[in-house]
Length: 247
Image 1 (cartoon, rainbow, N blue to C red):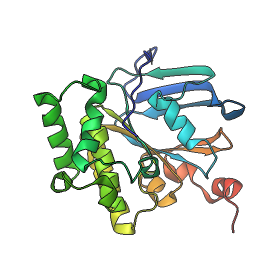
Image 2 (image 1 turned 135 degrees about the horizontal axis):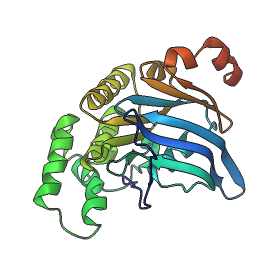
Image 3 (image 1 turned 45 degrees about the vertical axis):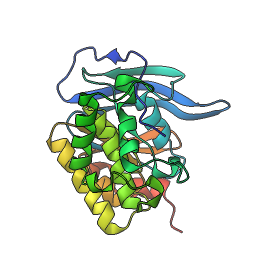
Image 4 (image 1 turned 90 degrees about the vertical axis):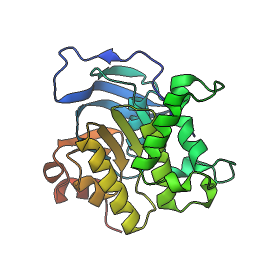
């Protein structure tokens, strides 16, 4: 359930363009006996909010896992601009309610990649955790059990876990799914602030409202890329009707 980070050495971008944080081409990935991504090629712009959009089963979470380094592609090329390894915030449902963890302990897990699992937290670790919890407005929840928190509170704690890693690339899987409108708006505003402060944010979502507030979109269907660019150019009625059939 913790933040995962890429243990593999990422391949650097050939020309280090200032407007690309990640570039991938001819990307295939999936699970044993079940291919998911098929010949995917696109780029993730730097210092922007990118939404991976598509219905359930379109490959959004798999692509996010590949970008995070927790799923190894079977073929293709994946390149990163210079920067720290990405921080990956999983879906809230991936975090068990029964685990006896406080909100602060959950955020502290974001420091494992920096110090290791068994070493005690350093002053730098504590400062990073304090700063992340303050930024997400969850410092007052530090001693609360994770399972006692509301959906919006828990999501902010998980994003704080990602921030504690102090990466300039934040990857989130369905960060607003299942939240009430107020919580969704708060999470979206927080992510927008992070981009303004120098973080590249990528979120997988099937929430079209959240996707339309992003700077860029990748539209996926059946593991293939249907479109890339600004939301108003990608999320057109014609494109959406191809992948979302009316109930």
